[in-house]
Length: 206
Image (cartoon, rainbow, N blue to C red):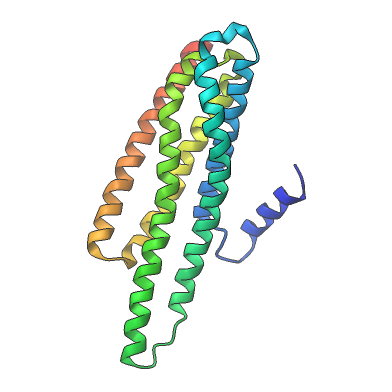
């Protein structure tokens, strides 16, 4: 751990609205990527887990890119919500200003809905890869893989909360679309995490 890590935690702990839940969802996903990458590296470090080498090499590339992307997603979420706050602070002294303010609120709220939705999508995509990996990964690191799966699932859930909280300020058509899509992602992610946990528990004979 270093000063940069503590600084991020202190920024989250501050009274400022960003970084908030959406950014935390992205950072949680980043931790999941990191753990999966670690398990993959531990798998290819021994010929005992030769069957898992191909998928491990693939996951290392995916996760190394994913770590970087998770940081970008966190920044995007903060920027999107900051724009929402700016929109609400716009003047509303006359009809033109009120109309412009309403339009900006809807647009910035849509961006603030899309930002955590992308985080949920990314986390769900990672979860799709874990059941197969759980069957072939280094057995000695399976608890870390189980933790990574839980973190990715948590990332989906946290991101979904931020989708739902911003959706009421967007158009009805967009609100229905994103609420439906996020519910499907939550359902799929829950099933994928449960599948991964069962495979790991079976291999560990728990």
